[in-house]
Length: 96
Image (spheres, rainbow, N blue to C red):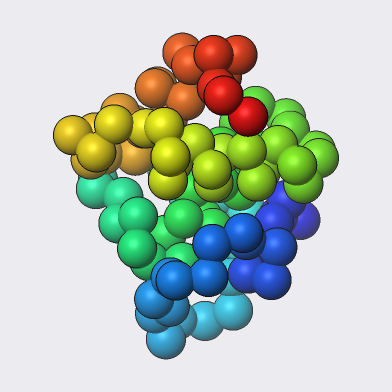
């Protein structure tokens, strides 16, 4: 079961693809494909996959990932793997 759903996300300015319901999607590969920070589906999938990899179970940790992506992760980092690595390295240095 995913950690977060669409209604849990803090930011509301996302675009949403007309894709099948993501509520059953549990894991997306965090590889060298780009992460579009404006697409809600991609952000939600990234957060839930990161949470699964790291065995995170609290919504507040998922929301911390969302905030980190929008406020802390450098914009020069484009791929899911780069962003994942940055979050892992900076988890405890985060300002919130």
